[in-house]
Image 1 (tube, rainbow, N blue to C red):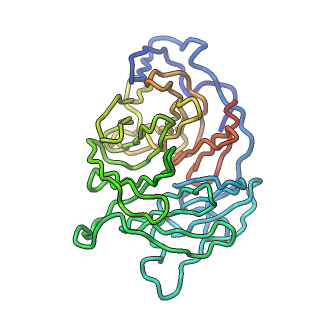
Image 2 (cartoon, rainbow, N blue to C red):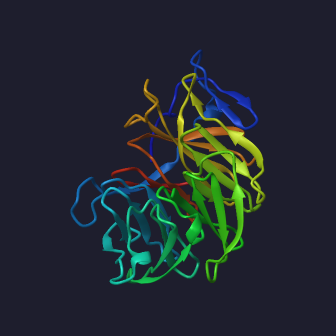
Length: 312
């Protein structure tokens, strides 16, 4: 979401898999490639259509924007131009379908909205009216514990559903039709945000280790990105890929205590081998999940708003 300047005034040292910007000089012009901001909507609050914390975001085949808000415990659906349409409806008498603290969403090509809310279930809703359809489990009953860290999900190129569990450092791969577990990948990082590219590689954003890890479908790391600005590690948040498998990473500056700082958000772009390409957005409030749509737009859940950019 942004305009005239790069997110930093620092030079670039290109290392495969690592973006490192020191503060000795100004960046080359190749480091500045800001995207055109198309629109921004939303505000902080508790009224219908407001955000407590816009964390997860997805776009349905018809262009509707779906937002997971764990603070207001809601999943909101907006029209392409940002008009609030409705919230997903928790079913009566179906405990596994009750929305708890929704952290992330994705939408299938058939228009089904899938939600993770730190329970062991992925909950599926009809995109047209928000009605609950069904759920499937990401772990067996005996595997569940008091701290179930399912907070991110995505759909890969083959239609499989990937669910990240930061507590277990685990990604479960589920069948697109019935949600049965096809595989389990143990990874070295904590999956807080997920994306998948055309090569069936999985991009993991781990805000705890300050690292973006790109792994194959065995869980083996192919390369890593450690976002660096101003000579310090920044906190990676949401991740996304475009059709060329370029990687977009939302980052925020950390304060002296290691926590993220408001009004410092940027979006950084890397190529498909992890080389830093450019800062493409700046001055974001607190970017979290991001997604690249089929039309080439970059949509950002920006804590108290949704921001859309044109990437082409």
